[in-house]
Length: 83
Image (cartoon, rainbow, N blue to C red; front, side):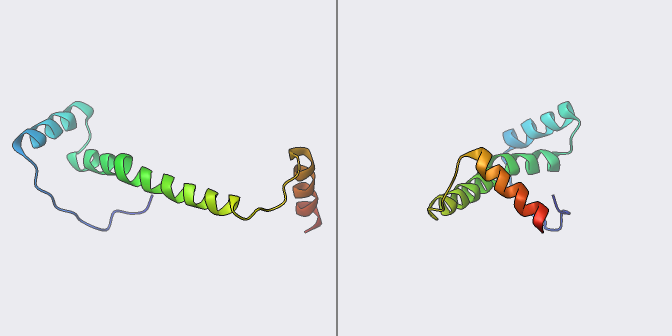
């Protein structure tokens, strides 16, 4: 993960701020870390999953010839040795 270089500001309800503050003390993590973890878990994880699904769909749509695994493994090894 890269360095944190952008600041985001938000406004929370009293209840949400209280609960996050309590969790912050309980977990010994700064409130900012809890917010970042939540964003990563809820939104960014889904974005990465979507990117991977699109990449897989793109690969599968190539209709590339595929052999059984032992034969393909042999070709991969052979190609790596010859380079």
